[in-house]
Image (cartoon, rainbow, N blue to C red; front, top):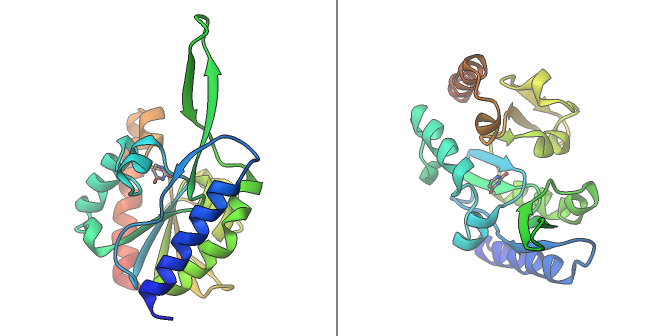
Length: 201
Ligand code: URA
């Protein structure tokens, strides 16, 4: 099978998993964006509303931050592959005091992430990256033995099972929640460390 056939099969599998999943609420799915194969692979958590609407990862608010820093270290979306750990949008519905329902994102459950584990593995084989940058805790737990992003962000780790470097970073949306100067500085430093790591591997 050539790469396009493989990618079409993956898309078919993601669609099938999403459409037959009955465990909890979901709101659409996306595949990934960027060239295949590609030396640099970013893996996020799960798509949000804007991502599902536009069919691409990291195009909403977090995506704006992500792209700004990608450009800051001299990269653009054209030279990197971007994907997620959970391919459907996990959502929850909440009723407010007026009885109106609102939909919001939720963190994917481990059981939901596991639905896509074989797809994530297959995608990595196809992309064949030199380095995987994990964005946030969800992909961190899948690709490293580290369980807390606070302890391992900005450090180059080698994953012996897949023979690929992993570079853990905070999720770009964390800048929205943590507005302290110290956090911003450490976040920017991580991008500069990533630039150095890319030059050294
Ligand atoms: N956050 C993610 O983790 N992934 C996306 O695609 C968008 C926002």
